[in-house]
Picture (cartoon, rainbow, N blue to C red):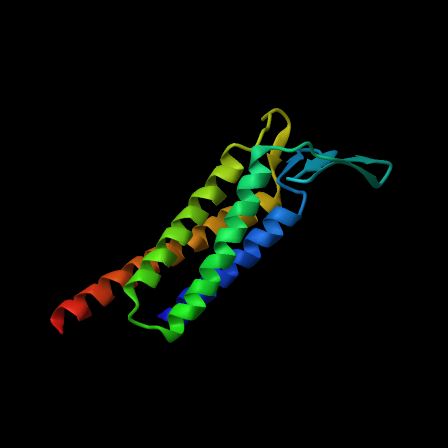
Length: 154
């Protein structure tokens, strides 16, 4: 099960990296513009004219979530070799929960107006990243339960 947790954290990290780095969080219904965390682009005469987005809280939350995901991945790999370390498992649980919350808040507080906008593919990458992070969190919580029951039986 530990390898499956590592795989879900890696998938979540990759999906999060794609979601953060691409600029299709929102786009117009007629594909006249698209915007992401870092750029806002307008399409004119078959070319994109892009402008840098001003700083917003979603950028900081998304980058922080990716940092916590990377920390979780490193801790999960260490946990693979230290199988019954309950404190390390709790630390992984805290970092994954923090990462899940930061991912969710990064797209919930993204400044947007809903007139003539629809979700782009980048936001779906972020949603799936938070879903995989949540699945990893649940799996680690089950590992904590398994470790506690085996340690009380001894």
